[in-house]
Length: 568
Image (tube, rainbow, N blue to C red; front, top):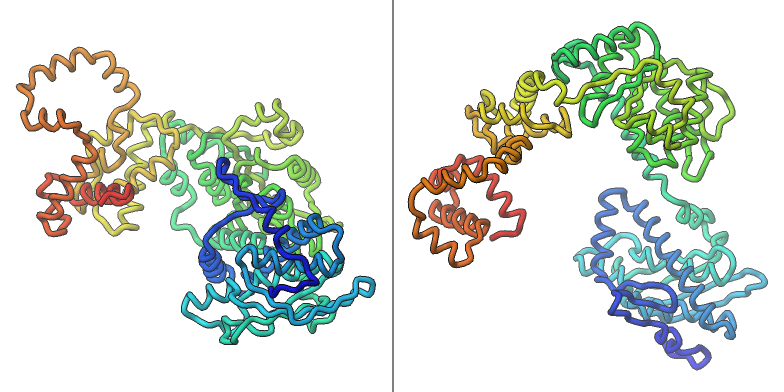
């Protein structure tokens, strides 16, 4: 901004900047600032454009700029209370220059606070957004200074007390010699609602959640390759404790009683719920599954019970909730204990009345569903602590079914391993005959805090790391399985016996002794040994594995670990 004797210098603004290096903070007056690379904005802009599109990215960046300009206007008013509005207004371009965003030259500025009239025209040189775009090696078809035009709009809106929108009439990123911006009250532009739309929070999260729900329902309603009973047996197990739970569930299949599934994380509660649905008269109707812990608390009611247009900011259309989508079928609510108190109250009313009202609506809608809920927490304890409503608990606890943990039915492990072997062999196009005896023993002794889901992940890992036509060994499944808690205790108790065994192994190796004397590090030795083998094998992993006495899969796994830790 060219120096003008009618306007104050920017020294009063610059003097407010303070670097507090002891605490890692930069201050301008009482506002914390950041000093970052401008190229980060280009990365952010490109990623946002690729993810949510150009129009939404433009709106987001203009909103950020608008709020930044508004905050700077508040700061300028505080620092220059005695100056006229015109003189104080000069702080906007000055602050933009101080921050390194753009070099500003005023062309024309006319305004009348009493009448609310405003016209501003400025030339920008070295606008950071235009420069970044050109540095990226491409010109654009439309103006690129989104954050900066938002900044000018926010700063001016604060001073004028009415919405003022700046637009870029010329932009260096489009091939123009410089950037030229023009600002007018929003109502004087050809699209008077443009600024209002920009300032509205984006409903992207809600739209993505809705699309995700629709996709989940499509997947859930596809024909299942298993018969109902096979789905439960093959996916969970066939032990006596499981069969007892399954028989209890089958007795509920032919009526509409609400079912409460209880069990630890990973025991297969959704598989039970889906099996119940497939064995019921509702099997041809929708099965809708909802994990209550995955939905933000402020959206849970609209997701479950639906929303009417205009019920809240971002509710641009009316849409049904999960209850309505499951009408005639089964609704499965997992982690029901995570429902907000208000959602719990609404759920209780829906269960008692058999009808609901959408958020923001007044029309009651009849609902015919079977409700299945699940939790890995003790609901009785949640009632005692006030986290869960007692009356809702009694309403849901009509037919509780406990799904035993995997450590309570270890006889199921061989059946489950076989099931997951078949699943992942097809997925990864491998032929694996089974697992080693040592691996099977370790699986039977493990405590399984993650239950069936953890076992499934282990088998998948074993399939990936094992060569075709080879048994999955213990290291490929999970190295930590090698020593169970009982074995750890046995190692401690028999430490002196092991010491005597090691004493009978013969004399120490001189090479190993020399390495230990030099401050030996096993990880570094392994890295150097693998590197030497790979160099001798000229990068051939299979040949290097033979030199080291390893399978190709084991060496590949170690190479991935070395790469992940930055080893060269």
